[in-house]
Structure formats: structure tokens, C-alpha cells
Length: 212
Image (tube, rainbow, N blue to C red; front, side, top):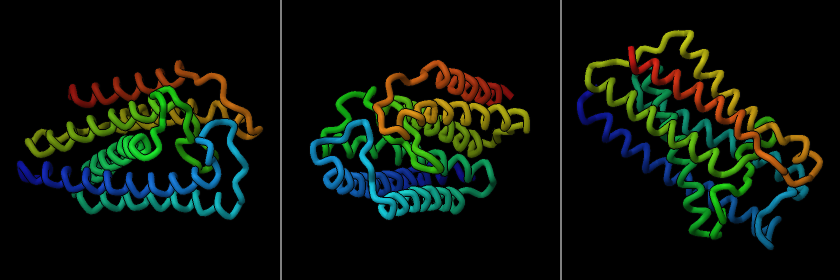
């Protein structure tokens, strides 16, 4: 990887992620004006099944596009994964930036939001999602910078297992209120301790990778 090539590529992918975030925001603005004209809040309203199916497919299509961008930008699996993680993080953060600019929402970082719909709704505070995205951006930039300096990052299988396990634990924290959401109730408590375990495991695993 050429010295400055990864920076130029990262800039291009960042711009792409910001543009994707605005498209995502535009769709959500239209949906909220239709189903939450008084302002988005829990409990969730019943959405027609045809609209819900379209939303699920749209989310899947967004992930596919971000994945393809990462695949085209990188040369190895790790580089492609890093570019994908960077684009995902930028997309997620600027999605909330644009929601704030267009709808003046969220009112705080602790506001509850629907984070994902596949295969069932993930819910949690905006802050939890943003912190994950910041970590993805930082980790991917470090990986790509080291690759360009001739100090390739080597992740052992056991480290991959711990990194993936940390992601699953974080996802579990987002699914922990699915009973309330399914019963159209407002989530009462987010299990920050589960989230913290996942974040700690992921960050410590990445630190062990860098120490090698």
C-alpha cells in the first residue's frame, strides 16, 4: 500500500459514508413524518407489513453497499474489513448528525433509538451506537496506517474469535429489550454492563493485536 494512497482512499470512503448517511436520514425523515408526526418516541407504532419489509431490504442493501466499497478499496481481507468498518462508522455517526440538523433529534445521547431491524429490532441509546462507530473508525485507521508503513497487522484466529464474540455481546445488549419492544412498550433500562463487557473485550483484544 502506497504511503498516501490509504489516506486518499479513506477520504473518498468517508465522503461516501457521509453521503450514504444523508440518504438514510432522508428516508427516516419521511417515515417519521408519516408515522410519528408528533415526534419519534417509544413505544413503537404498528407499521404496515409491506413498509416494514421494504425497510428491512433497504437496511440490507445499505450494508451490501458499504461492504462492496470496502471490498473494492482493499487488497487483502483485513484491508477490506478495515475500509468497511471505517465506512460503517462514518455512516452511522453522520446519520445522527443529519437527524439532529433536520429534525432536531435526538434530544440527548441517551435517547432510545431503533438501531437495526435485521432479523429483529435492535434498540438502545444513541450513545451506545456512536461509541461503537468511533471505535470502528479508530481501529480501522490504525490498521490501514500500519499496513501502509510496512508493519502489517496480524490477527490470530483466537483473537478473531474474541473480537467477534465482543461484537455478539454488544448485539445482545441491543436485543435485551426485545420483549418490551415486541409488546409495544417503552424500554425501561438498557443493560450497560453487558455493553461494557463487549466493549472491553473488543478493545482489549485489539490492543493485544497491536502489541504483536
